[in-house]
Image (cartoon, rainbow, N blue to C red; front, top):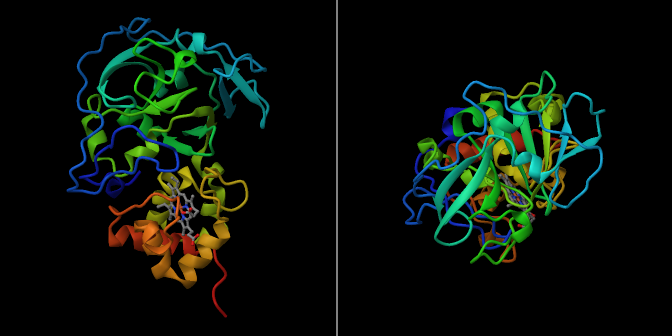
Length: 321
Ligand code: HEC
């Protein structure tokens, strides 16, 4: 990931009211209260000694419960295209950490029982070449975690909130059910999280599936064809697209991405090439153009970032005659 992606000033808003209005990262200077204020304690001791291998997670060919976590992608023993399932109870046997967070999902303070994605990775037979975890949610939202992000920002999978697992969710005070799984990052744990530009995209709820992937394979369309000769600016746009826009939008073909964005990539590309001003304004303030727009606003994007996104997306369109 490139440095400007971690733009200073964005803060994490409190829990999402509904998926349509996904919690946007707030622009610098706005007086929004950071959702995660501090990490009080690490109560839960890892269940293994430091340096010891975490226990291997049993993988099942069939789902036994709606709370099973589906796994796909580059896993030894799983044919390409197949899915394996891990049980909540087996995940709960991995090294766990208990975090005390404020206004993370439910209002007020809460105790969150979590497994770091790095520990989940270590407990699975991940095949060589995999460098990313791709999360998919029940409502068509998605999130991308590359190896550097997993190492530097320590994202974690939430197994319980205030001691209660997803079978008891929604947690008190929350009107929507964030289950079966939530992935999050916490500034109390890793202070740099407070500087993440689009932290909301790394905090998906309703996560049902994790895919182990090689990023350049799952986004291969964006590295070949019209993008093969992408210049530095368009390459920066690609980075932004992968880590933010792909939460709701898919690229061409079977490129990884969420489906909430509804519009085909070809339409976005045509807008970026033929109506770049509209494209940029839609990103920063969609409701200013279309009052009924469901897309979240990105008012914190700089002119350079918008130019990078426009250059990148426009490469997917046929040039005007
Ligand atoms: C939280 C989900 C979400 C995210 C994140 C998101 N979009 Fe969208 N986008 C949508 C939805 C939904 C639509 C369909 C139109 C609407 O309801 O706003 C849309 C439509 C669009 C359109 C078409 C506008 C039109 O005329 O119909 C463009 C262009 C676009 N998005 C660009 C982007 C870019 C670039 C990013 C990344 C910076 C992005 N979107 C991130 C949800 C999202």
